[in-house]
Length: 97
Length: 111
Image 1 (tube, rainbow over the protein chains, first blue to last red):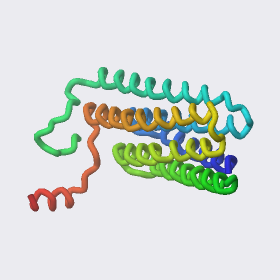
Image 2: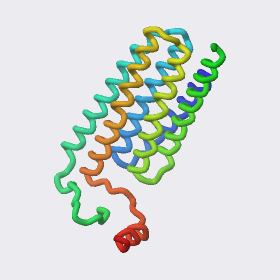
Image 3: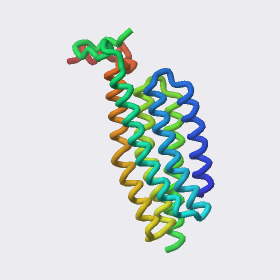
Image 4: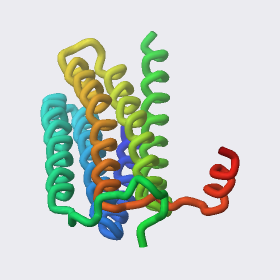
């Protein structure tokens, strides 16, 4: 069952990488990288248990924290450097051209 | 008792990997950034704790399972936060969700 879980995780990581390379906007790529990090946490935990290295759970815990903080930092960066006229106009629901 | 725990953990692992795969397929196939955000965040927030719960059931009551439970708590707290921050940043920088014009007309004529 652990092997089946690992195979599913690796398959989903391949699909997420496809989106990370193809994503039209920056936020698609950030989303894909964040999801890839969570999958990496799972792969470290499940693979470490399957191989008998239970101390790898510490690595997974640290990776989860760094993944979250990195995502927030990248989002802050792109939000701060976004062009000024791009702020949304709430009065009409028209999609921007 | 042992067999019961094995079956339960196997079920948790299977459900979690199914959710992870569905989230990845949704991330590739959905048409819009906000749709993709929805698919990714919902499936991941349930799938990751399910896989880790399956591991906890197999490990038993040790320090390792406490660390795994800590990862579960952390993911449950941070994953929705990251998704919210992402959607807010995308909305502020000018991304707009695809809206069906007919459905929008219907809802505006109703109200």
